[in-house]
Image 1 (cartoon, rainbow, N blue to C red):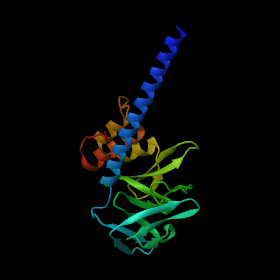
Image 2 (tube, helix red, strand yellow; image 1 turned 30 degrees about the vertical axis):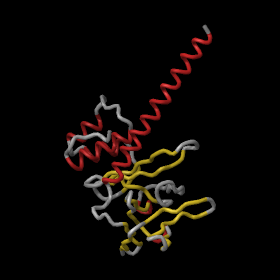
Image 3 (tube, rainbow, N blue to C red; image 1 turned 90 degrees about the vertical axis):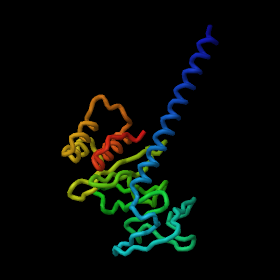
Image 4 (cartoon, helix red, strand yellow; image 1 turned 60 degrees about the vertical axis):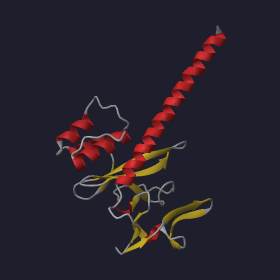
Length: 203
């Protein structure tokens, strides 16, 4: 009998683990899609320097490593430091410096962008940025919202509701008690509705 219960417990644990992995895979795919669609219309890689000038490249790669300060490598030979630029676009994403964010805490860990930069996940009247941070065990997404006056502020449900309230469809979708989507998917889908007028989730 004990063996029977043990087998049932193992099966239940495996089912939960499998479901969790599947959900993570779905979120990862939807996140990648949101990031890709939020790039600038130009397909070229570029960096925007602190003085506003822009340089274009064929390739732009993030270089990280143990005991190494992360940097961008343009065309396989030009080294670009985070302190030299305010924004950049690689083949995969568009990122901006958190220097302009109204937040006291800047990310210092490079996972998908240069340290101190945030990837854009929604583009249009409503811009949404995301920073990967560590909670001690896992990498988690922290969101920032660009409000109508241009300020980029840390996400709160109250702030987001205030920003999208002039679009009834987006507001209703975000505030609906029947919406059980994960926060990241909910934010991304709401921003899509707000920016395009199209009802579509990130799934």
